[in-house]
Length: 308
Image (cartoon, rainbow, N blue to C red; front, side, top):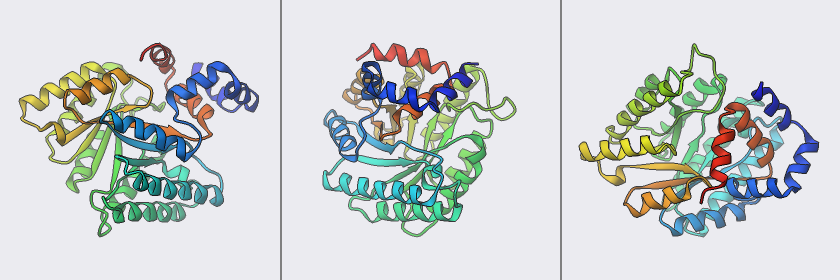
Protein backbone atom coordinates (compact mmCIF):
# COMPACT_ATOMS: atom_id res chain seq x y z
CA UNK A 1 0.00 0.00 0.00
CA UNK A 2 2.63 2.55 1.10
CA UNK A 3 4.91 1.49 -1.74
CA UNK A 4 2.21 2.26 -4.31
CA UNK A 5 1.55 5.64 -2.68
CA UNK A 6 5.20 6.69 -2.84
CA UNK A 7 5.57 5.54 -6.44
CA UNK A 8 2.52 7.63 -7.37
CA UNK A 9 3.96 10.62 -5.52
CA UNK A 10 7.28 10.26 -7.34
CA UNK A 11 5.48 10.67 -10.69
CA UNK A 12 3.47 13.78 -9.75
CA UNK A 13 4.84 16.90 -11.44
CA UNK A 14 2.56 19.13 -9.36
CA UNK A 15 3.73 17.71 -6.05
CA UNK A 16 7.33 17.82 -7.23
CA UNK A 17 7.01 21.54 -7.87
CA UNK A 18 5.43 22.12 -4.47
CA UNK A 19 8.04 20.00 -2.68
CA UNK A 20 10.96 21.72 -4.35
CA UNK A 21 9.59 25.16 -3.42
CA UNK A 22 8.40 24.30 0.07
CA UNK A 23 10.38 24.98 3.21
CA UNK A 24 10.23 21.33 4.28
CA UNK A 25 11.19 20.10 0.83
CA UNK A 26 14.18 22.42 0.69
CA UNK A 27 15.23 21.38 4.19
CA UNK A 28 14.94 17.71 3.31
CA UNK A 29 16.85 18.02 0.06
CA UNK A 30 19.54 20.19 1.66
CA UNK A 31 20.01 17.57 4.36
CA UNK A 32 20.43 14.57 2.07
CA UNK A 33 21.35 16.01 -1.35
CA UNK A 34 24.36 18.29 -1.83
CA UNK A 35 22.70 20.52 -4.43
CA UNK A 36 21.91 20.60 -8.13
CA UNK A 37 25.28 21.33 -9.77
CA UNK A 38 28.75 19.80 -9.90
CA UNK A 39 30.02 22.82 -7.97
CA UNK A 40 27.61 22.01 -5.13
CA UNK A 41 28.92 18.45 -4.91
CA UNK A 42 32.52 19.70 -4.97
CA UNK A 43 31.84 22.08 -2.06
CA UNK A 44 30.15 19.34 -0.05
CA UNK A 45 33.02 16.95 -0.77
CA UNK A 46 35.60 19.50 0.34
CA UNK A 47 33.72 20.01 3.62
CA UNK A 48 33.67 16.26 4.28
CA UNK A 49 37.36 15.97 3.40
CA UNK A 50 38.11 18.65 6.00
CA UNK A 51 37.07 16.39 8.86
CA UNK A 52 39.09 13.50 7.42
CA UNK A 53 36.58 11.39 5.48
CA UNK A 54 36.63 10.43 1.82
CA UNK A 55 33.71 10.92 -0.54
CA UNK A 56 31.87 9.08 -3.30
CA UNK A 57 29.84 11.45 -5.49
CA UNK A 58 26.73 10.35 -7.39
CA UNK A 59 24.75 12.41 -9.89
CA UNK A 60 21.13 11.49 -9.23
CA UNK A 61 19.38 9.82 -12.12
CA UNK A 62 18.48 6.44 -13.57
CA UNK A 63 16.52 4.81 -16.38
CA UNK A 64 17.19 7.48 -19.00
CA UNK A 65 15.02 7.09 -22.09
CA UNK A 66 17.26 8.17 -24.95
CA UNK A 67 20.88 8.27 -26.07
CA UNK A 68 21.21 12.05 -25.72
CA UNK A 69 20.28 11.89 -22.03
CA UNK A 70 22.79 9.07 -21.48
CA UNK A 71 25.62 10.98 -23.18
CA UNK A 72 24.77 14.14 -21.24
CA UNK A 73 24.93 12.14 -18.00
CA UNK A 74 28.31 10.73 -19.00
CA UNK A 75 29.68 14.19 -19.84
CA UNK A 76 28.68 15.40 -16.40
CA UNK A 77 30.73 12.57 -14.87
CA UNK A 78 33.72 13.52 -17.03
CA UNK A 79 33.38 17.07 -15.70
CA UNK A 80 33.07 15.73 -12.18
CA UNK A 81 36.31 13.74 -12.45
CA UNK A 82 38.04 16.86 -13.80
CA UNK A 83 36.81 18.88 -10.82
CA UNK A 84 37.92 16.22 -8.35
CA UNK A 85 41.42 16.40 -9.83
CA UNK A 86 41.47 20.19 -10.00
CA UNK A 87 40.45 20.56 -6.34
CA UNK A 88 42.62 17.62 -5.19
CA UNK A 89 39.66 16.01 -3.45
CA UNK A 90 39.69 12.66 -1.72
CA UNK A 91 36.72 11.60 -3.83
CA UNK A 92 35.60 9.01 -6.35
CA UNK A 93 32.35 8.59 -8.27
CA UNK A 94 29.37 6.26 -8.23
CA UNK A 95 27.00 5.71 -11.17
CA UNK A 96 24.08 3.58 -12.28
CA UNK A 97 24.19 1.76 -15.60
CA UNK A 98 20.60 2.74 -16.39
CA UNK A 99 21.65 6.39 -16.00
CA UNK A 100 24.25 5.69 -18.69
CA UNK A 101 21.60 4.29 -21.05
CA UNK A 102 21.50 0.56 -20.28
CA UNK A 103 17.76 0.43 -21.06
CA UNK A 104 18.30 2.32 -24.33
CA UNK A 105 21.34 0.58 -25.83
CA UNK A 106 23.46 -1.79 -23.78
CA UNK A 107 26.51 -1.46 -26.04
CA UNK A 108 26.34 2.33 -25.82
CA UNK A 109 26.04 2.25 -22.02
CA UNK A 110 29.00 -0.11 -21.74
CA UNK A 111 31.14 2.08 -23.97
CA UNK A 112 30.20 5.20 -22.01
CA UNK A 113 31.27 3.60 -18.74
CA UNK A 114 34.43 2.14 -20.28
CA UNK A 115 35.50 5.66 -21.21
CA UNK A 116 34.83 6.93 -17.69
CA UNK A 117 36.78 4.10 -16.05
CA UNK A 118 39.65 4.60 -18.51
CA UNK A 119 39.72 8.28 -17.56
CA UNK A 120 39.73 7.46 -13.85
CA UNK A 121 42.59 5.00 -14.39
CA UNK A 122 44.66 7.64 -16.24
CA UNK A 123 44.32 10.23 -13.49
CA UNK A 124 47.15 11.00 -11.08
CA UNK A 125 46.50 9.77 -8.51
CA UNK A 126 44.36 7.08 -10.12
CA UNK A 127 40.68 7.40 -9.36
CA UNK A 128 37.83 4.92 -9.02
CA UNK A 129 34.35 4.34 -10.46
CA UNK A 130 31.78 2.44 -8.42
CA UNK A 131 29.04 0.81 -10.50
CA UNK A 132 25.96 0.89 -8.29
CA UNK A 133 23.59 -2.03 -8.01
CA UNK A 134 19.97 -1.57 -9.07
CA UNK A 135 16.97 -3.89 -8.87
CA UNK A 136 17.23 -7.63 -9.53
CA UNK A 137 16.44 -7.40 -13.28
CA UNK A 138 19.82 -5.67 -13.64
CA UNK A 139 21.91 -7.71 -11.19
CA UNK A 140 23.61 -10.18 -13.52
CA UNK A 141 24.19 -7.68 -16.34
CA UNK A 142 25.74 -5.23 -13.87
CA UNK A 143 28.09 -7.82 -12.38
CA UNK A 144 29.06 -9.18 -15.80
CA UNK A 145 29.97 -5.69 -16.91
CA UNK A 146 32.05 -4.95 -13.81
CA UNK A 147 33.99 -8.18 -14.35
CA UNK A 148 34.54 -7.28 -18.00
CA UNK A 149 35.68 -3.75 -17.17
CA UNK A 150 38.05 -4.89 -14.45
CA UNK A 151 39.82 -7.23 -16.90
CA UNK A 152 40.71 -4.39 -19.26
CA UNK A 153 44.48 -3.74 -18.99
CA UNK A 154 45.08 -0.74 -16.76
CA UNK A 155 41.68 -0.83 -15.06
CA UNK A 156 42.59 -3.09 -12.14
CA UNK A 157 41.55 -1.43 -8.90
CA UNK A 158 39.73 1.42 -10.68
CA UNK A 159 36.24 -0.09 -10.91
CA UNK A 160 34.11 -1.82 -8.31
CA UNK A 161 30.71 -3.31 -7.60
CA UNK A 162 27.96 -3.15 -4.99
CA UNK A 163 26.54 -6.24 -3.28
CA UNK A 164 23.27 -6.21 -1.35
CA UNK A 165 23.22 -8.55 1.64
CA UNK A 166 19.51 -9.25 1.38
CA UNK A 167 20.00 -11.03 -1.94
CA UNK A 168 20.27 -14.80 -1.50
CA UNK A 169 22.87 -14.95 -4.27
CA UNK A 170 25.15 -12.41 -2.56
CA UNK A 171 27.76 -14.83 -1.20
CA UNK A 172 28.19 -16.52 -4.59
CA UNK A 173 28.56 -13.13 -6.28
CA UNK A 174 31.13 -12.05 -3.69
CA UNK A 175 33.17 -15.21 -4.23
CA UNK A 176 33.33 -14.48 -7.97
CA UNK A 177 34.26 -10.83 -7.46
CA UNK A 178 36.95 -11.69 -4.93
CA UNK A 179 38.45 -14.26 -7.30
CA UNK A 180 39.43 -11.25 -9.43
CA UNK A 181 40.14 -8.99 -6.43
CA UNK A 182 37.37 -6.55 -7.35
CA UNK A 183 36.50 -3.95 -4.73
CA UNK A 184 33.02 -4.24 -3.24
CA UNK A 185 30.65 -1.92 -1.42
CA UNK A 186 28.46 -4.03 0.86
CA UNK A 187 25.02 -2.66 1.71
CA UNK A 188 21.82 -4.22 2.98
CA UNK A 189 19.66 -3.39 -0.06
CA UNK A 190 16.65 -1.13 -0.50
CA UNK A 191 14.67 -2.47 -3.48
CA UNK A 192 11.47 -4.45 -3.14
CA UNK A 193 12.39 -8.03 -4.05
CA UNK A 194 10.43 -11.29 -3.77
CA UNK A 195 11.15 -13.81 -1.02
CA UNK A 196 12.51 -16.44 -3.39
CA UNK A 197 15.52 -14.25 -4.24
CA UNK A 198 15.86 -11.98 -1.20
CA UNK A 199 15.67 -12.30 2.57
CA UNK A 200 12.63 -10.49 3.95
CA UNK A 201 13.27 -10.40 7.71
CA UNK A 202 15.57 -7.77 9.15
CA UNK A 203 17.29 -10.38 11.29
CA UNK A 204 18.11 -12.45 8.19
CA UNK A 205 19.39 -9.44 6.25
CA UNK A 206 21.55 -8.37 9.19
CA UNK A 207 22.95 -11.88 9.70
CA UNK A 208 23.80 -12.09 6.01
CA UNK A 209 25.47 -8.67 6.16
CA UNK A 210 27.69 -9.63 9.10
CA UNK A 211 28.69 -12.93 7.48
CA UNK A 212 29.58 -11.26 4.18
CA UNK A 213 31.28 -8.36 5.95
CA UNK A 214 33.71 -10.75 7.64
CA UNK A 215 34.49 -12.46 4.34
CA UNK A 216 35.31 -9.09 2.79
CA UNK A 217 37.37 -7.89 5.72
CA UNK A 218 39.58 -11.00 5.61
CA UNK A 219 39.97 -10.96 1.82
CA UNK A 220 42.96 -8.64 1.63
CA UNK A 221 41.08 -6.44 -0.85
CA UNK A 222 40.00 -2.90 0.12
CA UNK A 223 36.21 -2.81 0.53
CA UNK A 224 33.50 -0.45 1.77
CA UNK A 225 31.03 -1.39 4.50
CA UNK A 226 27.97 0.75 3.82
CA UNK A 227 25.92 0.90 7.01
CA UNK A 228 24.64 3.25 9.72
CA UNK A 229 23.81 0.29 11.97
CA UNK A 230 25.84 0.90 15.13
CA UNK A 231 25.62 -2.75 16.22
CA UNK A 232 27.14 -3.87 12.92
CA UNK A 233 29.78 -1.15 13.06
CA UNK A 234 30.71 -2.29 16.58
CA UNK A 235 30.97 -5.89 15.36
CA UNK A 236 33.18 -4.85 12.43
CA UNK A 237 35.53 -2.96 14.73
CA UNK A 238 35.72 -5.88 17.16
CA UNK A 239 36.33 -8.35 14.32
CA UNK A 240 39.12 -6.19 12.90
CA UNK A 241 40.79 -6.12 16.32
CA UNK A 242 40.46 -9.89 16.85
CA UNK A 243 41.77 -10.73 13.39
CA UNK A 244 44.54 -8.10 13.37
CA UNK A 245 43.01 -6.40 10.34
CA UNK A 246 44.52 -2.92 9.91
CA UNK A 247 42.11 -0.01 10.23
CA UNK A 248 43.14 1.24 6.79
CA UNK A 249 42.34 -2.11 5.12
CA UNK A 250 38.66 -1.20 4.66
CA UNK A 251 36.32 1.74 5.21
CA UNK A 252 32.88 2.44 6.59
CA UNK A 253 30.56 4.18 4.13
CA UNK A 254 27.64 6.40 5.11
CA UNK A 255 25.15 8.72 3.49
CA UNK A 256 25.50 12.49 3.28
CA UNK A 257 23.43 14.11 6.01
CA UNK A 258 22.87 10.99 8.10
CA UNK A 259 24.74 10.44 11.38
CA UNK A 260 27.37 13.09 10.82
CA UNK A 261 28.20 12.71 14.51
CA UNK A 262 29.01 9.03 13.99
CA UNK A 263 30.99 9.75 10.84
CA UNK A 264 33.19 12.23 12.67
CA UNK A 265 33.56 9.98 15.71
CA UNK A 266 34.80 7.09 13.58
CA UNK A 267 37.32 9.32 11.80
CA UNK A 268 38.65 10.64 15.12
CA UNK A 269 38.89 7.06 16.37
CA UNK A 270 41.15 6.18 13.44
CA UNK A 271 38.73 4.31 11.15
CA UNK A 272 38.35 4.98 7.46
CA UNK A 273 35.07 6.64 6.46
CA UNK A 274 33.67 7.54 3.04
CA UNK A 275 30.52 9.64 2.66
CA UNK A 276 28.18 9.05 -0.29
CA UNK A 277 27.18 12.48 -1.66
CA UNK A 278 24.29 12.61 -4.16
CA UNK A 279 23.55 15.74 -6.15
CA UNK A 280 21.41 16.80 -9.09
CA UNK A 281 18.01 18.11 -10.06
CA UNK A 282 16.18 14.80 -9.59
CA UNK A 283 16.16 14.82 -5.80
CA UNK A 284 12.36 14.65 -5.41
CA UNK A 285 11.70 11.54 -7.52
CA UNK A 286 14.89 9.99 -6.11
CA UNK A 287 13.74 10.64 -2.54
CA UNK A 288 10.25 9.26 -3.15
CA UNK A 289 11.53 6.15 -4.91
CA UNK A 290 13.80 5.43 -1.95
CA UNK A 291 10.74 5.55 0.29
CA UNK A 292 8.78 3.38 -2.15
CA UNK A 293 11.53 0.77 -2.16
CA UNK A 294 11.45 0.48 1.61
CA UNK A 295 8.68 2.40 3.43
CA UNK A 296 10.40 1.77 6.78
CA UNK A 297 12.85 4.45 5.64
CA UNK A 298 10.18 7.06 6.46
CA UNK A 299 10.76 6.66 10.20
CA UNK A 300 14.53 6.37 9.71
CA UNK A 301 14.72 9.65 7.78
CA UNK A 302 12.33 11.44 10.12
CA UNK A 303 14.50 10.49 13.11
CA UNK A 304 17.68 11.62 11.36
CA UNK A 305 16.25 15.00 10.40
CA UNK A 306 16.34 15.74 14.13
CA UNK A 307 19.93 14.59 14.63
CA UNK A 308 23.17 16.39 13.96
